[in-house]
Image (cartoon, rainbow, N blue to C red):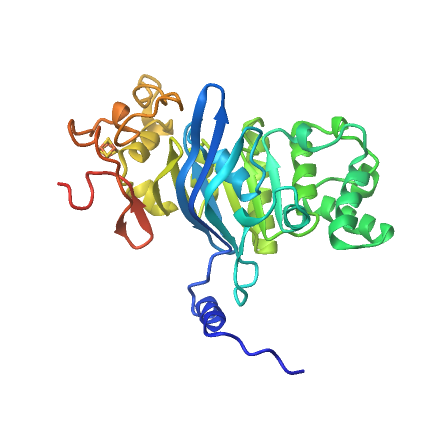
Length: 354
Ligand code: SF4
C-alpha cells in the first residue's frame, strides 16, 4: 500500500527518534495556570517549561505551594475549581512522526480530552479512596473504563482487568474483582489504583505523591512496582513529590520548583551531585543522612514559603536564600541559564553576574 510522503518536519522527528535523541512525549512550554478568587490572584504555575522523555521518569520536586501538583493537573487539563490555564502550551506527541497535539487548546470537558485522559494519560494520587468508588466493585470500575476506551466486549474487558490486577501484584485477581475498595489495605488499594490507571495501557502516568500516605515498607514496594511497570510498558512517568529520597530512587530527570517557577532542571546525578541553585542545595541539605549521627541537628531551609498573595519582588527565593545579594536578588527576576548540557538553573549568581 502506498504511504503518504512524510514532510521534512516529520522525517526529522523520526531521525531524532532513531538517532538516540528521541523527541519527548510531552513538552511543557511557558505554562501559566492561575487561580482567581476573592482574596486575589494566585499564579500557581508561572511560566513553567520542561519536557518528559519517552520511557523515562521525571520527578517534580518542591515544598508545598511550589505548584508541582497543579503542573501535573494542568497536563491532565484538569485544573481544580477557580483555576485555569491562562497561557503556554503542553505539546503531547504520542507518535514522533506526527505533529504534536496541544493539550492546552483542548476543551477540558470535551470528548477528545476525556479520551486522552482515560486512555493515554493515567493518574494516581496520594488518596486512592478518592479515585475509587465505594459503591462499585473494583472489577466493575475497571471493566467500565476498559470498555469505554478500548472498545472491548464485556468478557474480553474482564479478562484484561484480571490480567492488569495480576500485573500490579493483587493476589487472586479474579476473586478480588468482586471486592470493594474499602476491603483492601492501604498498599493494596494503591495497587488497585495503579491497575485502574494502567488498564488502558497509557503512554504517560502522572503520579501525584502516590506513596506519601504509606508506611516505609509499602512505599518501597509501590516504588519497585512502578519501576517495573515503567520498564515493561516503556511508560513515561511524571512523579510529583516533596521527598528527595524518592527522587533519588526513581528519577531519571528532576524539575525543582519554587513558588510556581522552575528553578533548576537536570538529570538526577547532576541535581544530587552538582546542584547549581541555592534552593536545590538547601533542599538537599535538609535530607536526613544515616551517617550524620543522632546528635546532629537536621538543617532546615530558613523561613517559610511566602503566601502566594505576597510574592517577593525579584527572585522569589531571596527572603530565604543564604546567597542572596542585596540590591540584586530583591530586584531582578532570574532567567534560566544553561550550566551544562541538560542542566539549567534560574539564579542571578550564574551567567553574567559574578
Ligand atoms: Fe539566591 Fe539570588 Fe540566586 Fe535567588 S537569584 S537563588 S536570591 S542568589
